[in-house]
Amino acid sequence: MGNFFGKIDKPVFWVSTILSLAIVAWGAISPGSAGNTFAAIVKLLTTNLGWLYILVVTFFLVFSIFIAFSKYGNIKLGKDDDVPEFSTVSWFAMLFSSGMGISLIFWCIAEPLKHFTNPQMGGSGGTADAAADAMQIVFYHWGLHPWGIFAVIGMALAYCQFRKGMPAMCSSTLVPLIGEKGAKGPIGKAVDIMAGFATVFGVAVSLGMGALQMNAGLNEVFGIPKSIGSALIIIAVITSFYTFTAITGIEKGIKFFSNLNLVLVFAILAFVFLVGPTRFILDVLTDTLGLYAQNILQMSFFTDPYGKAPGWLSKWTIFYWCWWIAWAPPVGGFVARISKGRTVREFVLGVLIAPTVLSFIWMATFGGTAIHLQINGTDIGSIVDKDVTTALFVFLGQFPLASLMSSAAVVLISTFFITSANSATFVMGMFTSGGDLNPGNGLKGFWGVIMGAIASVMLLAGGLEALQNAPIVSTLPFMIVMVFMSFACVKFFKADLKESSESNYMEFDAPQKEAN
Image (tube, one colour):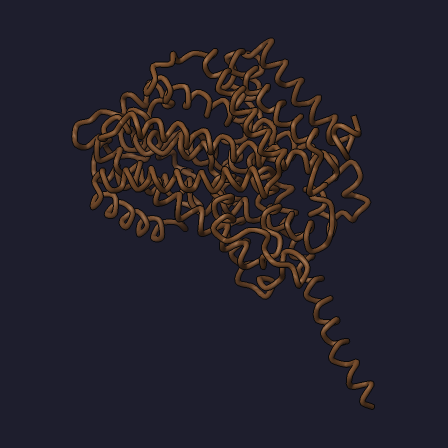
């Protein structure tokens, strides 16, 4: 096994593998029991601890911005003479593709319409106020806050890997607080296992969602029946693609598909922008940016203590924050891996701004146009309520060249599918190999197949919707770990500046002594 997988961290590898397979077996044998258990835990977290998620996620955003503009911003994520491995464009492409991925395509029509047609914050559906509120909420859920989460963990991992030469493991980021012995002991192993568990199930659920959406698109374009069998074939084909690209490495496979993904994003975006209600889209983007800037502080701390919208916050915002935290290990790990040679300031601002701006433009274009169609009598909202997976293709069906654009959308979903999953496959290889920046091909292939298999079993068992709660169960302890990770970062950075200052002093003082 050692020769096939290369280097492995046995405790993390075996516990992650056994835990993942055990939960999948539970879901396959008794999906009702597994689903109800996870749903109950998630309800407990989102209902009773929503205030904590609100505070901590906002803290991550504020903390990352503070670090970027502080004296620590000039610290390099690497040695002083390291330069970035990837061009800025390729870096942005990989950031965007690994972060939001399939979810952005899945919800870009559905979420704005759900908030618009059935507002939970008061008021009537289908009104101008409902439209403005819907877009503002969407910007909040897909804007700076999730990327603040990814920035914190990515910054910590990148610093440890490239500046300190430590293993690419979440446990490494806690060394200033628990020491190297603690990081290699039970506490560190528990942290790494949590990260691996969240990664495997977060990606598997997204694969299942993506397969169902691709099946809906293929049904719309080619008449391929919507069935579990079709979805399983899609998972098998895409799994082979993303596993292969993960094995070929970041420079070849992942970079290629991320760049292709960005080209497709801009092509489809440009089509909808130009053929759709262009002026309306620009008005929506401008107006929503203003509302977002005006109300971001209030939204960041909104907990609905007086029951203005019972259940809405836990169903939407808190669930989103849990979901982004579950995705923090794979996204943060991958973002760290591709950011060697950049300064802390460049890293944080790039991670926060570039994907957020593109998400805003995407949501304003697609969500804004969907609302425009709804206002003008095309009832997409009722279709979304029945089947979210068809939303994008019903939307594209309202435009010229509908079949061509739906085909392009299927390809886009597949590239998002591949880029999100192969980055996670690469990261799982790092996490279970003791932090090896170039894990063995056998290990990456193993995790690629495992994630595809988990998604398939969940679909077969009818438990995809229920088991999407599985990765969220680990978010509370991992969120607390990330808070400690933030404090550890500050200790790392303080020590770094102190070492640099002492080094500069010695270099300055040496010539003076020689002269004397």
